[in-house]
Amino acid sequence: MFCKRIRVENFRNIAFADVELCKGVNILLGENAQGKTNLLESIYMTSLGKSFRQGVDRDVIRFGEEYTKIENTYFDGIRDTKVSVSLFADRRQKQIAQNGVKIRRTSDMVGGFKVVLFCPEHLSIVKDGPAERRNFLDVAISQIRPMYMRSLQRYATILKERNALIKGAEEDRAAFDSTIDLFSEQLAREAAIITGYRVRYIEQLKGHVSECFRDMTGGRETPRLEYISSSKLTESDCYDEKRCYESYLELYCSRHEREIAAESTLWGIHKDDLEIHLDDSRARIFASQGQQRSLSLALKLAEGEIIRTDGDGSYPVFLFDDVLSELDSGRRSYLLSNLDGKQVIMTSCEKKDIVAERVISVKNGNFAALEV
Ligand SMILES: Nc1ncnc2c1ncn2[C@@H]1O[C@H](COP(=O)(O)OP(=O)(O)O)[C@@H](O)[C@H]1O
Ligand SMILES: [Mg+2]
Image (cartoon, rainbow, N blue to C red):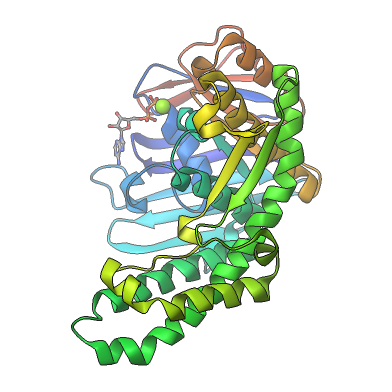
């Protein structure tokens, strides 16, 4: 799979751009604040339907404009496909179309054009808090399992409603008593589905992460990945949807007073973690910064390997935002020597030793291909 052309209107500091990309390595080259990350972000939005940056979706609309439109023409292995995403300043709903046919839900688009994003923040994924690792899992799984994303969306909605009900319990106990079970059942059902996807994904991830980490470091330590259920579900419960559902339901139904005191839902997949060990110790606490970075890099490359092996055998598009300058020479050359057969779109302030098929200069939101 590769992106052939990206055309954007009114996207952040880009008034208009129509950029042709090629297979292999494409570099967006320019000084700071010129629009390099913005173009990567626009490409990402045609994959996941939302930005990887903080804020609301509509923040990407160029200041003072009423809409933004992104059009991505990509080769999906068989034919060219065009996906477009438009956002409007005056409404929350975005407009998505594939080959001119309107797509109603974002989750129906996800899984079409696939990407792996790698930015400097991802280098600390091993040492950051659980939320970053959950986000890693959520993005990675969504692209290969569309039903997962839908479950996540339903879970978020039910959680919000259940939390509101818990918060209001002191004031209106009757309302709480009469409806809490319904929300608990719904939440437990989605939690069980999501947990099942997550543990199975981690199972797939393990081998790829170990292999990558071994290649990178010469194989002294062995990484081990484990799903940590904050609700103390056992590993076999996590794999068994019915048992997982029952365990969650039991928790939700037997501890109302604790949840009312805490004013929120205390158990669920929104508190779980992906724990990474090196040999027998927790990498988050005991690994050196270098090892943590190697593990993070291995996780990202493994994400791409799974998309390839789980799907039609073709790699997703890799979006590297300023990562090369963040890596030391060993990890940098490892990454650069692993790009064969992949389309990579990377941003950088300097070209240095990067071998690229296409170099595009970025200046003040304008893009121009340079001679290579
Ligand atoms: N909605 C927006 N409208 C116009 N400009 C924006 C918007 N959001 C961000 N910008 C501008 O985009 C620029 C940053 O672009 P970015 O792609 O992050 O730079 P870099 O080339 O360093 O990656 C900043 O100057 C910022 O002010
Ligand atoms: Mg940038």
